[in-house]
Structures are given as C-alpha cells and as structure tokens.
Length: 276
Image (cartoon, rainbow, N blue to C red):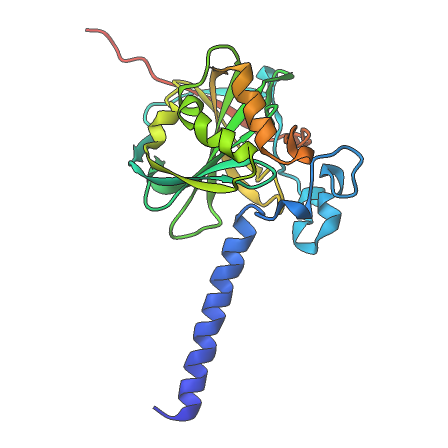
C-alpha cells in the first residue's frame, strides 16, 4: 500500500475513534464532581450548570429536562403486557464514591432490559436523596437510578428509577452497609463481589414512562425514563449513611424539578389475563 493510502486509512480510523468518543462523552454523566455542585445559590449550583461549559448548555436551554413531577392529571394510562423484559446477570461490581453520589458499577455484562424489541445494557446504579422525581408534588426520601444504554448506539439511554420512603431497611443497601461505612472514612472505591441486579428488587407491576434527560451535567436529552409506580422503603439510617459518604455539597443531591413542557407521561399497567 502506498504511503498516501496508509495516511488516508489512519486519518479515517482516527475520525471514527473521535466520533465514537464524542458520542460516549455526550451520553455519559460527568464523573468529576468538582466541576459542579448542588448548593443553592452556588456559582456551580444547578441553576448555573448550563453556563459552566458549552457542552452543558442543555442544562439551561433544553426542552426535555429531568426530573419532573409525575402528576396524575397529566398521565395517560396504557394497558400493556410485556413492554419491558429483563435479562439481568450476576456480575462483579464495584462501589464507588463519586463525590456527588454513590455508584454501583458492574464490571462486565450484567445483562439488559428489552423494550419493544431493543436491548439496553445495564452499566451502573446510583442514589439521590431526597428523590429527584415527585409524584403529585410529593418528594420521597430516596431515589435509585439504574442506567442502561444501547450497545449499537450509546446515546440511546434508558434509566429505571425507583422511589423510597422511610420505613423498613432496604435489603440491597443492607448488603452494602459495611462498604458504605468505609466510604465515610474516605475510601473512594472498593470491589463488592458478584451482584445480581435483581437484588435491587426492580419488579413493579406499574410504571411511568416519559422522555427526559440525564439529571446531572451534561443533562443530555433523549433519555427514556421508566419510573416504578411502587414506592419502596429504606431506613432513616441507610439514607443518613448515603449522605455521610458523599461530599458536603451533595448531601442533598437532587436536581430541582424541571418544566414539564407538555410532555406525555404514560402509566403502564399490566393486562389482566382472562379467566376461563
């Protein structure tokens, strides 16, 4: 092959790599929490996220931002059977203190959810306290996000959200408590062994869906949100532990509610099987 041809191939390969990296960076949450915070009135607070970086402009100017209030008067009820199918797998995981939240990250293929024939693979889960989404104006004590994306197009993101109120301890957080206590002592990352995602107990019968965005910079839009209608319980001590582990500015790491902008919210309910 001629030198000029080699150069052309190299340039094409580099362009592909840059394109893929750009796509991934736009779809992923920011890991460096020093670049933003949750403090009301802060120059790096939620009201200013869109001003801090050009690539975060959606935080200020986007029309499909999250979180929102899931109001009953806006909801369209859809009887649906088999909309979501989970095929999660046991996989090694790491617990990471990202400063602005606590994250469980699966190291390999932890399985996926299938939505209308498309597979979205699970990457990580993290907590916000208090909840970011509200239901009929009520804000809950904790919210868990399970972040999935398409292997063929990383910009296609699906987040499954679970809401919690104070009550009995959450079994999944109970399993992680010893690691969380170590995070309070400034251990930033630790392997937690094999974790099956269904230990989170995601199987509710009814769930809301709507189109929104990531709730941290870069606030990328086009995210399909699936919010379980069932409100689970978490102990007061568990919520306190999550707050103590993160940095001071993120003890309350919930982004304020965003304008609804006449988005459609659907509540999916299972079709009852006929009795014969």
